[in-house]
Structure formats: C-alpha cells, structure tokens
Image 1 (spheres, helix red, strand yellow):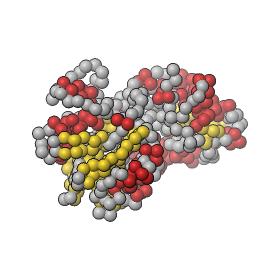
Image 2 (cartoon, rainbow, N blue to C red):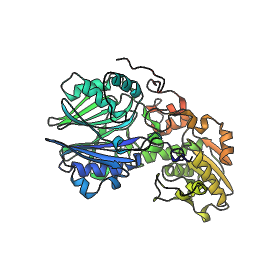
Image 3 (cartoon, rainbow, N blue to C red):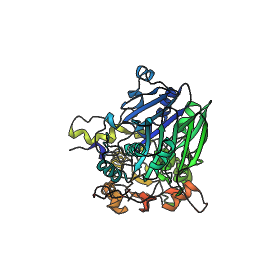
Image 4 (cartoon, rainbow, N blue to C red):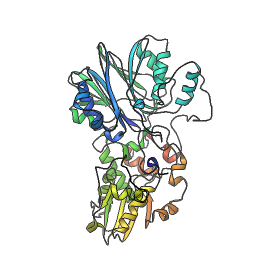
Length: 472
C-alpha cells in the first residue's frame, strides 16, 4: 500500500511556536508569526489568547491560511497569545485533538502549552502517571508536561513548571500561557531554537527570528539553554532552571529546517549554507558545466559550491509551489510521477551538460534517485550529486521524523552502493569536520548536535517500547 509518509526524502521537523505578551494586537501578530513559521509544520495550526477572564482559542488541520479565516480569528481575543504549527512526525493520521496549543484546566486555573521538540522519556512518564490515575486526552508528549504541572504541590506556575522540567528529558522549546503570564523555556541542551523579541511595550517569542522581521519586532536575544523567561505585569524575569547546561543545537536547523532569512546563535542561515557549499567544493570538487540546487533549501549551498569552483550556477530545477504534502495521487500507475509533479527541469539549461546537483541531505534516497533520473531523461550528459551535509546514519529522537535506523538509506548501503542505486556518475558528502567549520568557524569548539551523523546523543536515550518503568 502506498505510504505518503515514506515518500518524502527530507527530514521533517515537528513544529514551530510563536507567542506575544501584552500587546493589543496579540492575536493578529501571532497569526502573522505563524505564517512566517509555516515551513516548520503544515498539518495543523492553532492560537490561544488570554485575558483576565480566561482563554479564547481556535485550532484546526491544515495551513495557517486554511485554519484561520477573518471570522474565526476575530473570535480569538486577548492581549497575550501563543500559537503553534505542527508536523506529525509519526505515521498516524493527524487529528484536531492533537493540534496545539493544548489547553488545560487545573486547580490553579487554566494553562495552554505550545511545544517544539520531543521528550525522549515521555512514554515512561506517561505510563507511570496513568498508573497513578492520570487520564490523558491526546497522544502528544506535550501533555506529559501539563500533568506534571498539575501534580505539583507548588502554588505558583513558575515553580511547578520548573519542577516538571526537571523530570522530562529531550528537546523542548516551550511556551506556557496562563491568564496573566507568558513563560518561555528551553531545554538544557538548546536543541531546538527559540528567540525573544520586543514590540512596543510587549514581548514576543518565536522558533525563528524571521517572524520578528514580518511583524516589526526587535530581536533581543536567543532563549538560552536551560533558561526560563517569565513575562508578566512585573516585567521580564530570566532564570536558569537547570544546572546541567550544555548547548548542542540541532545541526539540521542550519542545514535544512530554518528559513534562509533567519539568524540562529548569531549566524545567518543563508550565509551558513553558502559556506557549507563552498566547503563541499573544497572537499569534493568535480569537473562540470553547471551547478544546480534542489529547491528550496539547497539553493544557498549550490551557489556556494558554484562560486568556489568557478562553475556557472543555473536554475535548472523549478518547484511547483501549488503541490502540498497531501496531494492526492489518483491511480497507482501515476504515483511514480511524484517528483515530476513537484519539480520540473529546464530542458535548455540541462540538455547535453555535465551537471552537479547539490542537495542538503539524503535520508531515504527516494527523491534523490528520481531527480537524477529526471535530469538524465531531460538529456543531462553526466549527473554528479553533492550533499552539503554528512551521511545521516543514526536516528533522531528530538523531534525529527527519523526515529528508526531502518529508514536511513546510508545506514544500509555504502556510498558506492548508494551511488549505483540512484544512478549518479558520482556521489559525495560533506565531512563532519567541514560541517562544523562552515557553521561554527575555526574556534576549535562547537555547540552542534551531530547525533544523526555520529550516534553521540546529547541526552540519555530511553527505551521507547520495552516496558521500562519511570521511577520518580
């Protein structure tokens, strides 16, 4: 049976979060902020707003522009709001129940949570809490945090949240909204990005800085690993909730996930990808007539590769921007047309040429193989594939949809075997050292998570389905 989930060869990041505290247009700003983060999740969207008498919210399945109309957006009222866009990293069908922000009522009032990342010990905690009588309403690991807050003996949300975060492990860029506060928190490794900005007399938080540019907010700083920031009527308070801090930002934020116009840890994403391409050219040069990138995330690396070797960069592949992940394939015999539907080759650019195709990663190998074939069918004389990241050979447990090594083609084949299977004239990857140098410079240390390349995870990885119990 055709499985659309396995067809897409790019890693998928779980979601994006955006929040605004104390602004008369908080809901509208949140709506535009989510538009800027749409690339981080296209399956559901939601906004929860707070005012002194409670919450209003709306969420649903689809893109931000599909979920929110003028009519239902007008019903979400409040001067503080948090929003969420989501990509489901499992093969389960999405449901509106799983759409975030999640809203709960407990003894201290109402809270809403929006979470980007994945808790590696969520199943163990959930199993323990269920045996203590907790009743879960969703499959989301975000709900685990809400139950831990509700069980806390503390009578203030900051202390209860700090206690909850001392229990959970993994990646989380978290926004928590109450009727009078907005709290942002980042896991002690800072695996997922979270930035803080200022707009008029209010504050805003976003998974990426590009959202601040759209709404005219001033970037203040990144939220630091292990940091909690409380925005309330007393202003802004920043504190560390963990003393086990070691920054290890997901390297794929630089390689693929983040928008080119975002900045992360002082590094512009577009410029870092160009450096990846230049370093790839130094390590893996080839004689060719032109360089092209796979739209859109590989274009920066492709221009860097072309510039470094003095080979012309061409727009050889054109993306059909009106085809989404939910495109319906009418008959089985047309399902192999997926790449042709999403990408077109400019015949006069490619025909008779020796082509270097630069892509940012190979995960399952399906799409890369079909693009190579598409270039050959269009008349390319040679097709050389260059990947601006190292081989992905280990699964990710921090919010990317590669939680099984069986899905990773390079974990099962040698580079030469993979080259043969995709029918490329040559295939080369960037080295790990080259990746670090391109992103972090030559300062001799790095703050990147490289687990998908090395198997060295920044946190303990808990058994997922073997009945291991959580011990309080």
